[in-house]
Image (cartoon, rainbow, N blue to C red; front, side, top):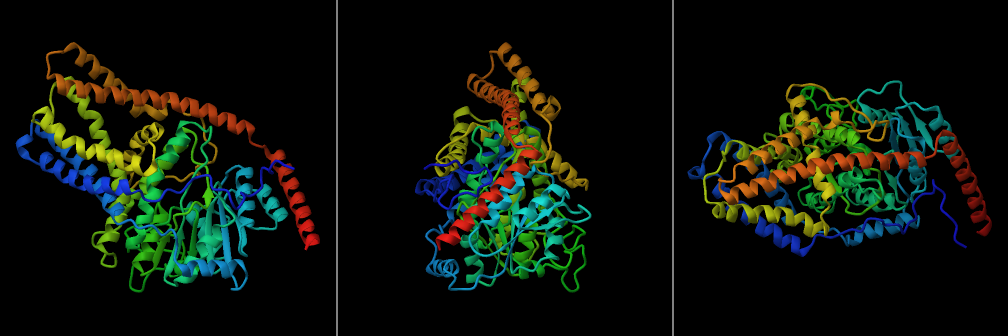
Length: 565
């Protein structure tokens, strides 16, 4: 007889909501042709014979260079992609021996990090973590110091740790727990990333097979059904990164931690102390590891920790298997806050990471880590592009002096292939991803300004309490809309200009205006969808009752299994 699953029940072993897509042969061809198209385009852009307005040309040169550099870096990474599925025989043998108890399982601590997320979100992750295959100890690391969570942990029989301060946010929380636990391996899960039962059995063998492996990272995937444009766009925009770019980083030992769904070797984290003869300014962040642990001097402590491990000779591995499902921001304001925080970490990597002069990194590893800030540098290029077409329509000045079809013949192949690669790999294009990527540009630029001026960025949990979006959240986007409307009005009143160039500029400006409108409408709808979901979520009393019913059912099922045996 079919029965409804309990809301707190862990996911079944066979559940795989996100299909894994191996690197496509057509994508490989697109990458090869794209590299040639990039060279073809640069020969045109850098030719000073094509300079029209010098100031606009220099801005265009900067923007186009940033796009080409990052795109070529991504394509070069993809060109070296090799699939690790199916995996080698040794990993399969280790997995079978662990699951059949032929080999003693090493001690494992599973940290579920929380800082004020709703209790029902945390408990669903904790229960799923507790039910993972292979023996382990599950711990709630509670920076919100909730007595409700502490009581829930006691009911579930899992560990509960809190500290008296919230210094260094999540990194400080993890480091405090490292000092109070002793598992050989440490799993870090965000409060809203629910692991599948086979998470440990799929990751631990990589650490056992190679003692030089310090970290095993798995993808972040998200449940976005009926959650609105913001959640869908935030999730889809990361698909290419997890389906192709991160797996390709394995070839150069440059895979990095993304904060959750990761397993560390404790000995590797313990090795991250200030080196002999090295000052605490060694990475120009002015911080040191407290007796080993997660880096505490950056807004991207996950990437910095990975970098420091590689600097010290450790290996990192990305396992391209969907083993968790999380929640991405479903409102505009927390999405922009998350993007701002991530961008701050990326800019720190550029300005304070000493990547170019680091002798302990290979050239390929330097390129892979520089791709982090170069991704956020695309926002500089986007901001320039957003201004160029309206400027042309308003003052009849363009950066390039060339025939339209000459320019188009150099421009189109590169940008069409830049769009084709993610489409061929992901098998689809979601306009929500385009809209949210463009929406994050002001947050990335503000992060650049704060990083350059040395201002600290506050940390807040993504799924804490956030209000609805207001027009104050989109002031830069509204300014673009007003600028675009003014440019279109002028263009329509001056029909004597070059028809082809003017038509293309009008098209670009109209697209910009449509994106801003779609952002405003989509964000409002996303707020309404989030309100509906929040209204359906259990309150404190309902959460307490659901937990009690789950514990009772779990005990009955355990007794029945014992009697059956």
